[in-house]
Image 1 (cartoon, rainbow, N blue to C red):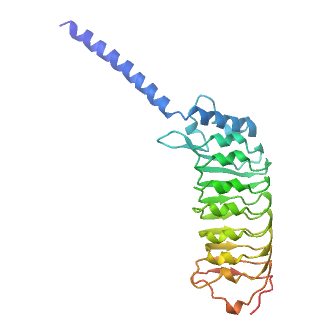
Image 2: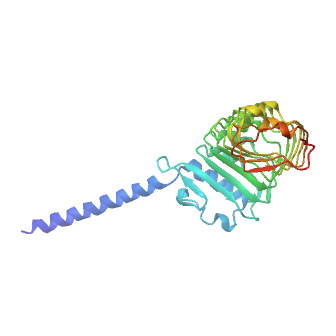
Length: 281
């Protein structure tokens, strides 16, 4: 009769040890990859280690639970990072971001003290679907390597200080649905290769783009077009046509000239602005 309590106590002790071990394993499995954690901590150290924005970014904690960070539930690799909306964050985009190779979404936005150029390290982020570098003081060119990030569906480089031409390599982004490069200092012409885009929301207004609108854009399928406040010249009638789908076309404040009476308007067009040009008819 005395053996049963001993067996019961022994079983209970074993169960407690086993449960504790399983909890430890479960906790360990939830931690993000060490490479990702180290990269994030380096980003923190370069942009503002003492800022409240990074309060939850603490060593030896699960970085998948940090604010503005998310991980894939299966791999536990960081696939989402949003840094910004804080005027105190300062510096340049840390190249170590390129080590977060599982990223699908990357934002650096609303950071007036973010300077420098777009780093080449971003070319390593081949899984990116959404890249937003917007409302900062980034300068330099739009790098041609962005055309190698072929999973991109959304590219927002608006409201910065970017300069130079629009790289033709962006036309290699065959999945792209939104391209926003407005309010920069971009120069040169719109690439001929952009005629290959399908279902693209395209905003390039308030730059210094010049030259004629490429005839190849007549083959493109835009859902939205805004080329206003540039220095474009010549005939932009290729953007029009009964079968085309844009809901909005804004060509205001350029030097365009064509006969509007010969243009067929897209059947789904809801907004049109052609003011401050030399359009007639």
